[in-house]
Amino acid sequence: MAIALLIGTILGWSMPAYAQAAKYAPPPSYSNAELRKHDFLGQELRSAEFSNANLDQANFTGANVRGGVFSASVLTDAILHGADLSNAMLDQVKFKGADLSDAVLTETILLRSTFQDVNITGADFTDAILDGAQVKELCKIADGVNPTTGVETRYSLGCRD
Image 1: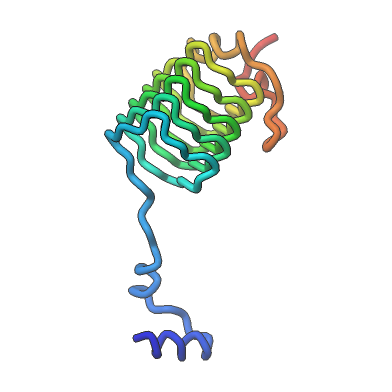
Image 2 (image 1 turned 30 degrees about the vertical axis):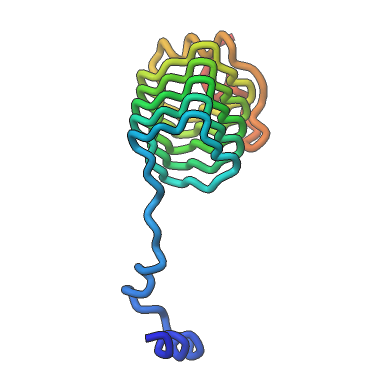
């Protein structure tokens, strides 16, 4: 098979579907995991599964977690500074004391999540799905401009001045 792939590459033939499928790796799954203080600094975690995980004090600084699923996880005192969490499911998450500064949360589902003592300076919530009560509370502390998207945090939340 290796010779056939080499010849096909030289002749410009496309790779057979079964060979292409062999190159695909499913996203990592950390569901129900105990990941307290785990370091995910700058990691590529697209579509990773973190449902019901304990991510207390975990570090996601600069990580790419686009499309990740964090449903019902604990992110108490977690560091998500500059993380890309767009298109992610962050519903029913406990963010007590979390650092979401400069995070990109565009088109993210955040329903029924709690935001107590969080830092959202520079976070972009554009088109995120939040409860009205969440928006009201977050607008009280919203400040800054996201360095990646250039969007003001207050504007992305739809805060009224």
